[in-house]
Image (cartoon, rainbow, N blue to C red; front, side):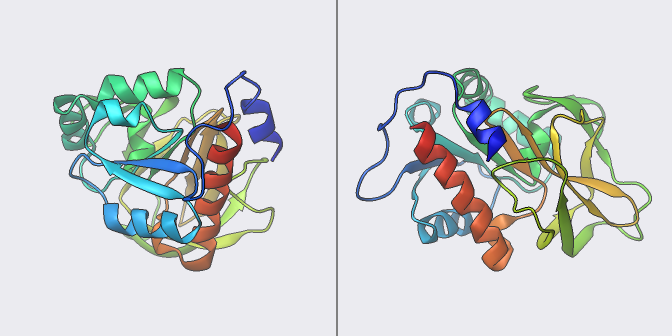
Length: 225
């Protein structure tokens, strides 16, 4: 939890957004992602998930999740059309906890090669490229994720999580890369820079281990709010 403690030393006020129903976490609805699965999983770990398609509502929440499945370029186009690009960037600038899941993690990076070069949200250094050296694509199934450095998202011991993807983050700085998995090649599985966090795997589809990841993120939000 050292990274969390380091990241939270920003003078944020505490107490907002939490209460008897649990801490509020906005699940960004831009038409791409397992919204209901994420919402259900968050409720199971004691959070109060709010699915929202309103950028202004996002900015009111003490924590947020950007889910996603599908094409990077299409997702960025939709985020831009719905006013979420600047809202997410502002959310990160304010130092609030945000978690990207699968495509959501990829959107945090500077650019992607999928369907031709495309700009990402630029919250993290690096870019997204098609996986290479893997036995087959898409990469679907359970793989052990090994923690490389302290992060509130992962336990010290390696655990299996569920992946579905053909693209991944590359050129990620060592200080941002928090966990990896092996699938013929080393794949960035968990990233974190301050309170911008992401998992390439789907915690909402990863059983008890995945729920624990969402529970840890919820605790980060609670401590920051």
